[in-house]
Picture (cartoon, rainbow, N blue to C red):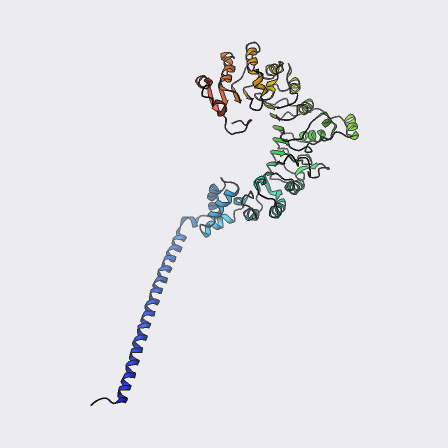
Length: 507
């Protein structure tokens, strides 16, 4: 019997209901399968994390005290300096949590301040914060910065408040304002950790001698406390410090660049007299516009002495000062008159290394003062000369004869001395050699700007027993392929070559 319309409609509705149930069950199966896969992945992740944690717990590293990890890292970080040390320490802090703790909480890893990263100097500020109370190593060169603006000033002001923590301070700039921020802070701040202090100001000739910091009131340096200071270099900027509060200063260098950086003679002698352990003294004139003359002895700067200074000099004369601890003395490009003024009031009985470099002026006066039968430097073993070789009236030969009796190392620089080429002093020395026996203890001779043939002739003129065992030359002096002097030197002596590019730099 055929189905009625109602039965057909009922069956069709039931069929649709079954289809919906099948679709729903299929969708639920897909969802359950997806959830099952998710759970499997989560289980694998948890198992991996469990294994990692278990391995971490069992790793020997985590059994070590933090101090040992820090000590091991110090062999990786501390050999570097400046921005490189910062990058190495920062990279190690991202290895794992334990390493990060060891690096971030060790102040000695963050003590290098360089400002090389550029504005806003985040790395340098981070180092100031993370270094805690550790002593700082500051090495900043502002001459390579494109500009000097608010970020630089802001950081220098912040650095000024940390200068008391400095262990070494090396600062170079071609503007005066940075020194106006830092030097007054150094004058007031005791620096118990400071071992090396070096400041260099390189100004254009157009601004030299202008807008220098106020220096009218000489004071004691470093707040009167710098017991460990061993090396000090002041180049091109005047610091109004009359005394250096240290008993350990061994190396002192003044490099004058501007017309008003020259301190009075009385102040200068006061500085030298306050240092008992000084071993090396360098006085250099490296810039334009500076003139030393006899007025300097009146206690004034280049402008000349006032009547008060003259009367003070008459009633309270400057007494001759002896520096028995000094073993190295360098006069580089200073006025000859200034050198003579100093040498007339200073005595260096134990100087062993002497450098005299002059390009102009009456350097014969210097030879008259330090040469003669009773030379000012009887114990010199290392002698470096520039400019004096051009003197042709016998003073140079007399100086070498009387002052060179103990010289074992002799450096002769002719690069900046064109008169040496016009006046063949080398051959004059050779002619006098056998009669005067110049430099009888000579073991090494180094030259700059002298050809191998000239050097060979100079050595051949000496008696065989007095010839040096070693010669040191510039490679550029040996560039002539037709010069056969090099071959003779290498066959008969030990030959070395200087390193570096400076005209007066030794190896």
